[in-house]
Image (cartoon, rainbow, N blue to C red; front, top):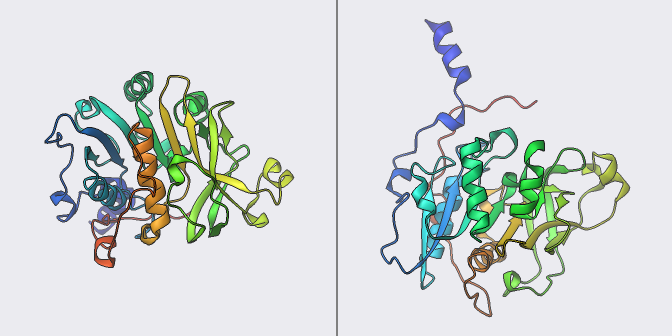
Length: 299
C-alpha cells in the first residue's frame, strides 16, 4: 500500500492540482456585462515551478482586476491553460497567454492551433509572457507570424538574474515608464524574431555567463531584447515580454504599466498619455497562488 501511494505521488504534477478555494472565487469565462465593452481574454496556465514563480493564475487575476478599472474594457479570465468553451474568444480584442511553453503548451493540438490561427486572421491582438514564447520546432513559423518571436534552444538562452532597463524608447506601450530594475526574475533571450514588423521595446545587458549557445557567445556584451511589439501582416498587433517569472515583481509599477499599456495597444484601444495606472498591496500580491502538489527534480 505504501509503495502504491508513493507511485501515485510521483506521477502527480502541479498541472493536476485543483483550483484552491480562493481561486474558485475568481470569476472565470464570464461574459462581459456590457456587450459593447472591449473583451480582453487572459489565459492562465496550469500550476508550474516553485511557489512564487510561474504564478500564472495569480498574475492573470491581478491583471483582470486592473483592467476592470479601465473604462470600456471587459477582462475575461481563463484558467488551466485553455477555455472550457471556445466561445470565450468571440469578439475578443486581445488574448494574453501566460503559461508554460515548449512541449507543455496547451495549444499543441491541431484544433487549438486552428483557433489561434483564426484569431490571428481576424486581427485579434496577442500578448505572450515568459515561457509562452518557448516554441516547439514545428511551430516556429506560426510563432513568428502570431507573436513576432520564438524562443528556440538552437540560439536561445535563459536563466535568473537581476536586470536594469536604463533606456526607455518612445512607444505607445512605454508611456509613463521610467528606467527601472527587476530583481531575480527569469528571462529568455536571443530569440528568433519575425523578419519585419517587430520593434524592440525593452533591452538590457545579460551576464556573459548565461550565454550558453554559440550564437549568443558570438554576441557577448550586446543588449538583448526582452520586450517587443509586432505589427502583424494580418493587421493585428502583438506584444511579448519574457520576464514575469517572479510573482513579487508585479509590485514594480513600471512592469504593471508596461503590461497594461500593451494589453490596450494590442486590443487597439487608446492608451493614456501617462500610461495605465494601477496599485497593488502586499495582501493582493499574496492572493490566488497555485497549490503546488509536486515539484519534479530538475534535469
